[in-house]
Image 1 (cartoon, helix red, strand yellow):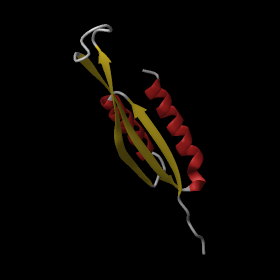
Image 2 (cartoon, one colour):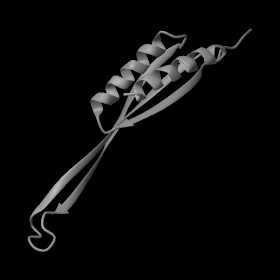
Image 3 (cartoon, rainbow, N blue to C red):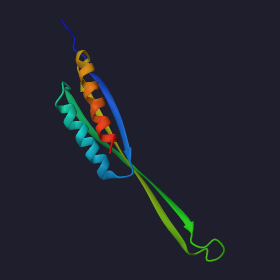
Image 4 (cartoon, rainbow, N blue to C red):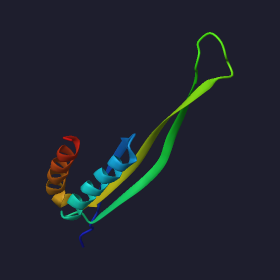
Length: 103
């Protein structure tokens, strides 16, 4: 009796631009679904939001302040595959990542 085990690759993506992150996840998932992967899931993680408060004038008017916000959007892609076909999945994944990073 042969026991079949699935291995898992977990990829974490972070970006300030949520549209770019979504398109990158879509490109990766399209490429991986055409390979021998058994299951693919994209998980959205909570967005980190940092707010910076800055005085508008360095000498007077402490009540006058500006607020700046920095958001970091995060996704995790989990790829489940059969360990015997790992090489083909990783080679397709490398090609996809290079094409996404190039622009």
